[in-house]
Length: 203
Figure (cartoon, rainbow, N blue to C red):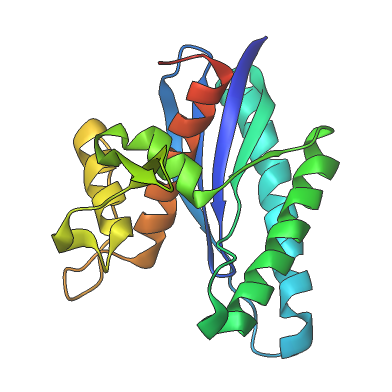
């Protein structure tokens, strides 16, 4: 039975996920929209979305078994940013739902998913952006995006993924702009590359 790695970027509206084989090759890249019915009370919507995510994980595990004759043996999930004091309510919501998602993954697959921070995933996926500078007499690594992407770092990640994987079909709005789900997909790819590097599968 083949073994696969699953990498995810989880938000409260979309989940991006990428499937990789043990050679470091991309097998699948998709997203799940976390929609709730209007009749679901606001205070219960996170629980409803967790159930939707669980059903998705169950189905995906079966899909991997049926389509690729294998099983997922390692899961990487991006940890949400925590240094956003101006949006403390959003941060709290993301942290809470991320915890729910990790518990669902543990329940479905039977092992602990591994968290990767946003900084670590971007640093490993975009080594061209890593700079060394001195702070208090010590060399430290910093991540510096080009000026054109300072306000939209996700766009840089998406553009790099689109170049690396030209076969991927992306989703656009009626105004011909990228849907938000595309950035969740590309972020899950970024997490996957970082995870593969941490596992020593790719350099």
